[in-house]
Length: 204
Ligand code: FES
Image 1 (cartoon, rainbow, N blue to C red):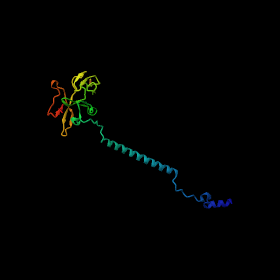
Image 2: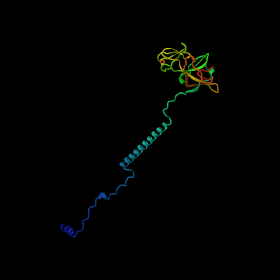
Image 3: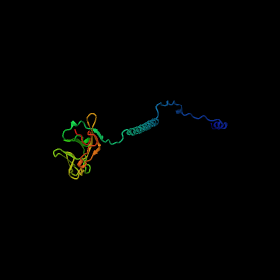
Image 4: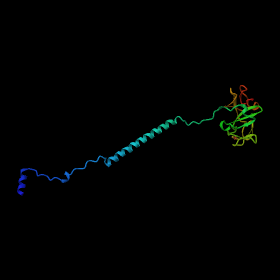
């Protein structure tokens, strides 16, 4: 036997290798479902995509809001300076305070006619209160007092309150202009300028 092997080896022929029986077993077919690592990778890709989409959508939304903001400027809307207050017959004798909050005026009527007082104290500019029981305007800041015509008579206010320009429009309504104010001019009073239908006093 030893001699035969030695003889075979001497001729150079390779000895057959033993076959592993496990290699002859049929292998199970490859699963079609992706491996766990593939699923995790694809889920990661979806999450990244969603993140990018949401980020982009949020950015565009913010840009749109900023753009729309231009159409709503931070403007302070002041009340109109020229406006109508109705017909002269809407006002009886005395002081009417219904426009004080909106336009800072009082509409007054006496034997001379209709006039409008600009509700600003002539001391330092506070808005006085109308005290009907005392028939006077009283400034809450430093105590100045004005009678029903707006004439100062107590406290530090140096002069009467100003009066607004009045006109009657084509419909017969009273138009007030608070940018045209009349100052008291001593003995001549609040002078009427222009036609009788315009100025600080309407003889109605
Ligand atoms: S502001 Fe009216 S009394 Fe001073």
